[in-house]
Image: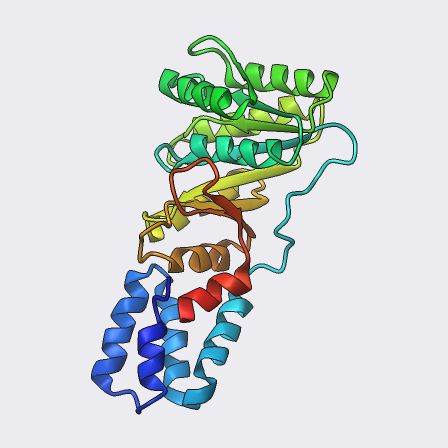
Length: 278
């Protein structure tokens, strides 16, 4: 990634000029790290000793992040249930499949539920992924009640001893309150059968600050437990991962760097920040 490394190297060799600081500001802003964090980093550049600058910036970024655990909250009784939520086009359905593949490869029994029943393409996409990775996919008829298929999935997962139940919900627009309410309904009906352990919000890493606003709206409607950032491959938008977690104080748990089924990895904050500063 190394978005900031070239400038930090330059600052370590000579005092930053006004022009240098302005160029660095533009790089930080374009990385989607946010205006507030950008200004804090620039203040560090102005006052820190050059040999201590990278450490000071790394510590500043770390201090903005959530202190919550980044691991999936596993169920101690029954299947671990994960709701995948987010706006259409963010890579939500693909992320559900990637997560299913991640656990299936570790020997876990995984059930995928296609609860985005209003988009036939989303159901078909998840079914195709399920065939490729050898994971069962439960789906209902077109335009059927998403909560009903989620309930059926919960019953099946519990009765048949699945380790994981991953539910792909509709990519509802965050401005439509009735669709947001549907998420709450899905959660309630699933919890009649078994606990919901995780609600993961999928954020498109290329959408910038608008993506953070979407996440904030979802967080106001449901209790988000984690974030998945997608589409970071080949992008200079690496700051969005830090900015999103700093804004929501919800832990980033997975990042996606490509389109392949295995291109989803657990987020490791120290390593990610080190790459930004390299």
